Image (tube, rainbow, N blue to C red; front, top):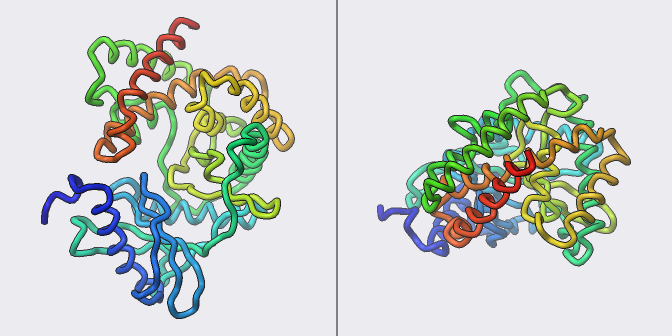
Length: 333
C-alpha cells in the first residue's frame, strides 16, 4: 500500500469515508447510506443519511493512536452523564455487538480505526458577529460542566488523559514534545523551555483541589456549541480529560490574544461563568500561565500532526506567536 499519510488530503478523506462505510454495518445501517464529510482535523467526521429509515447520524472515525477504546468509552460515559444532568450533549448509538465504540478496518487504510455514531442534532455554532455574547454563553455552560464534574463519580474503568503540568509540559506531553518541532531555532527553543519551566512550577504551586481542577472539556470553543431555537448543545469532547477548570478559558481565548475585542470576550466569559459557579480572582491570576501552557501544547500538536494541512499551513505563524507569548510571559515575571 502506498504511504497513506503522504496522500493528498482529498485522497485520505475518500479512504477514511470508505472505512466509515465499513463501520456502518456494525451499527446496523446499510452500506449504501449517503455519507458527507463534515470535517477532518483530529478525526474524520461524516454525516450519515440512513437509506433504510431516512434517519440522520454523525459517524466519527478517530485519529489512529490518539485515544484508546477505553478512553473513548469514558468520553461517552461522561457525555451521557452530562446529558442526564441537564447539559445537552449528543446521544450515541450502541452497535449490534452491544458496544458504542467499534474497531474497524479497511483495505485502503493501513491501521484499524475506532469509530462511533451519534444521532444527528439540529443547530449551528453562534454567529461570529456576536462573539461577546457567545463567550458569555460559553462561560455559563463551562460553569455548568465544571459543577457536574465536581459532583459526579465516574466508573472505576473511567480513563482520560490528564492536562496536568506533566500532561501539558512534562517530558512526554499528551500532544507531543514541542521542543522537537521542526522549524524552531535553538534560540527559540531556549526561550520556550524557560517559559515552560516557569509555567510548570506555577501550576504545581497552584494545586489540584476540586474547586480548580477536575474533568474539563479542553476544547470549548464557540464552534463546539450548536444553537437551535435558544437551546445550546455541547459537542466535540475528544480532548476532554482532567485539568484545571481555567484551562477551558485559556483554550477558548488563546487564538484571540492581541485582538482588540480580547478583553470584552474575557470579561463576558467570566461574567457568564460567575452566574453559575464561583470564580475567585486568585484563580484568574493563573490565566496567563495556562495561556502559556496552551501555546506550548499547540506547538506539540503541530509536531505530532505535521502531516495535516493545518500544521503545514500554520506552523511558522504559531511558532512566532508562541515565542512572542513566551517573551511577554517571562518579562512579566
